[in-house]
Image 1: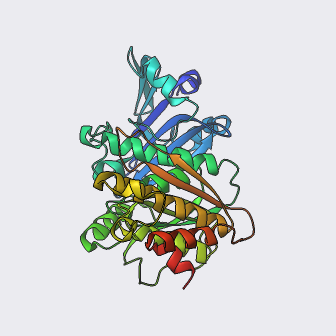
Image 2 (image 1 turned 30 degrees about the vertical axis):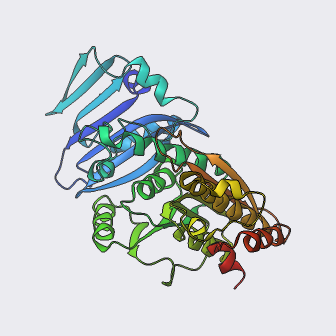
Length: 374
């Protein structure tokens, strides 16, 4: 019989070797975490190369354990701070083995840090297949900057969804690429938040889309799918979209993502633009700011900042509250400005005349402006 005190002190639990081959899950792991609304056990159950997730409140976990784990598995391991205990069940007998190892104090404090969302060491096999984690769930060294960017992105999303109380959410990811962010967002909503997440990632590369779909299917991420599409012209999902995401969608692809969100009345937009070439290619001298156009690298940077400023102003005119954030340090990515937008008010036109005047004076074009005024 399992010692209840071991379970209460534990931070992690793993059950393996099911009593019968007819058991639904070959292995079950769980990790105690501090979420916004209390302490929970995050449970991951493995079956036929798929992983199923649920969050169980700490005060309900003992009963769940006694019903689902204790009678059904021959080996159960509990890990706490600097200790671990393994229970071995055989022929009606129980053997308890204790060792002086386990999670360090550093790991314990990290598990409870205020802004904890996703962390190295979490048992998330999909991130191994994506090449972000090693097989023992350590961050792949070459992916450290990417991991930090994505984790920061999700922390900003989490801040906007603190009071989210709906049972489901639908999200479109424009230019998802290898889909590190898309998988992280799905895991955040489906596992951490316990929301029914329906997420579609769009990208032009068919081989990348196929690979991402295979990973999603392998781990039972039924609400996550990827589609080959050119977001500038193809038909996309069109109803009940709660959130649009674009991380480094190149050049005017960001404008099409923003336009799509505006035209569908999407409430939340999180966009990190990339490669803003359009204004840089068309802008000409025409006024007091001509000195900023004399030198190529300065012209390029000014054009990029001008592009994002115009996007933010147009979003405000469309009824969005807009924050422009530096979402990671420049050392991790030079493309580090995020437009965080939430539709909170009625549309106006206070910024549009100013933008139009500026475009005429400096003879440049801007795609989001053109899409909104066609």
